[in-house]
Image (cartoon, rainbow, N blue to C red; front, top):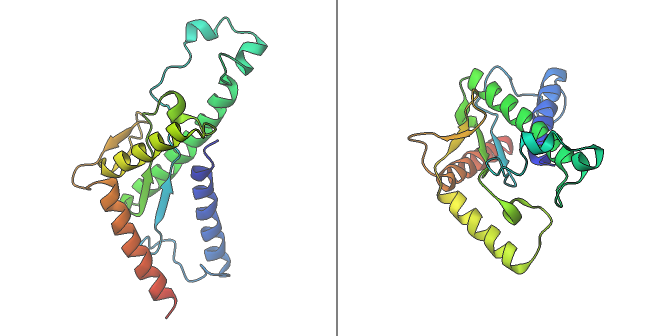
Length: 181
């Protein structure tokens, strides 16, 4: 399951709750002002473009086929992907609605295939491949979810993911210093 996206939503809900109750670390945050809120969401990668299943084949599956098919778990995969996608679209919609897209950075490679997208293949070869994927992902342009297609699209003029992470780190450091005064 892609827990990091769900955890992002939970974190925002926590901030909102503390702000509304005027209690805790976030009591002074005005939710109508978006400047103090920065959200960095790092994905684990996904196989969005890999076609593991087809409607024609799936229409012939029984109970066992929907639960286990060629070492995959279709039903679990579908629910996990749907949950992750819905939270990501919700967060993207929220930040786009508030006109502060630059405060939400989601870095996710949705082009993985096979073992690249598996969370339980810890062979030295796969771990090395994942490091290479991470390095490539840092060089890729910043992208956001297109709310109509659900796919990540490059955003012109935003630089690379690595640049965006550096910029986020500076902003987070400045915010931390401001709070510790």
